[in-house]
Length: 161
Image: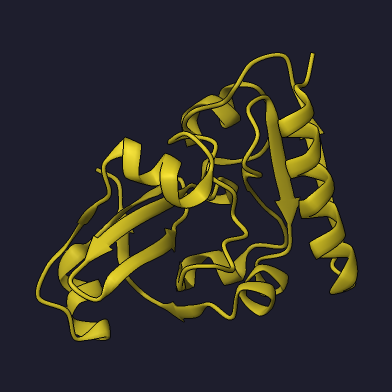
């Protein structure tokens, strides 16, 4: 059963996406998929289509970084592209404070903090990621995601080994 707070968050996300005429689906499921591999295991999509949102801490503030589930972040590429000295994953309590969501459920759509999207995702027709609510997955076109978040797109990941 969904809480009132979570229902309000879903309603707000729907309103935000609808206002921008973005096609999307919110997929409810029995359990929370906390990793890209969980989504694949439950038949949501391929590993390349899974799109986790990671919150990064930098000396210039926080950044939402969205990558393909088939890749991992290369901090050196982010530092070079954004002219940063220090980049690291934000602590889980900071992620909760910034986004209102726990790690593993952070929404793809982050408009309050700058967003970067790895260039591999633009090749996908649909990507699957968090929507800020447990037991729900957001499916949308990556080009729409980049438009609504005003994301900067560049290569900052590498295939998992």
